Length: 101
Image (cartoon, one colour):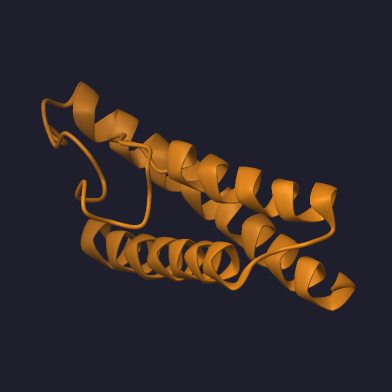
């Protein structure tokens, strides 16, 4: 269980900096009259939050990891959802970085 939580924490840490940087770029683009999107992910995604920035999505994933840590238990569905969220964030942030270069 500790190894699993450590791996999830490492993913969250790695995504945190990337999400902050991406949100800063989105803020700049919005000030220039661009980045008029309503949300990063569609409503049908694995996230319940809906935002035009990355940090709220990362916060949702972090809250689920914290809940797993606090209860010291997890069900397979919760773990699978968190892993899918982290994968989606990694993929989307990587694509975003390539798109804005």
